[in-house]
Image (cartoon, rainbow, N blue to C red):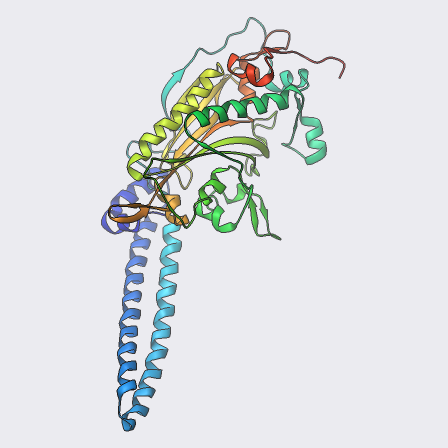
Length: 422
């Protein structure tokens, strides 16, 4: 949630953020009014409770002839205290609901606008050119007997698939390369739960505008995660973490699930937009002062992966209206997909500042006591990368050259070759 102190002292910053996102500005004024009502209700409750305590002492020491009247007065006051406590609780909940409906405050420099208003920060690598008609990733994958969409649909429905043979090996190789690089950068590897409680899913900000994307198991009151960002954020919920030695960095390897609601008819071919995939996600707890520098480090590690895989890509600064609820800034790294003649997102990395930590009760100690930490996340490898790899490194006969960085993870295999007679 947003910082209540910022709401009190600099509401215009929050208004500008809401405007840049294309979100309600009026809700800021509603939150200010709700906080004033909350503080007033709490003050009244505390005043009555203090009066009740003082009266209680008078009753205890009063002469017998005065006690009956004082006891009656105390009973009346007790009813008033109970009503004031209820009013304070209601005012607190109303204020919390309003502030939780305000998205994180975007950082200075984030482009205003929506999905198409991003700013390209850089383009890296030469786009592949072929002396033959390029095949798309599904044609290549089927030729390698690496991707089976038909049987995925038979078993589980649309947007499911099987990765087989070199397809399965290729994904494991990608994830393993990413994990080794994460270890070099000081990340702790984690295989987290992929089912989480409602308070964890809500705390990370995924039950707002993204609620329709999330699979829910009502019989168990659990949610399937769409990224290991969620359980890794919950890992230290309601804890005081030690950042004295630097950021806490985790690399979560997990299966992820997304309903892809609202994407009907969009990217239905192949494995670009699917309901289930694997992902290696970086997640960091750090101080608010270090968050922007850590964000740059995360995108640097992502770029290092794409460069090692020989992919042409660009880095974009995502516009405010296309940020998720929790992100104050997000960089996407998009790889060139030859048959689409377009860049497609392979990774994103978000600086969530203290937004998630406030909701989840995650703090660190400092000279002035405890305070919320900053959280950041970023993808280091995922199933979708196979799309760009197959298309970028394809050869005319349907084979695919394996980038050198991946060969040690494929037993030295340097070329993936089509399978016949399967």
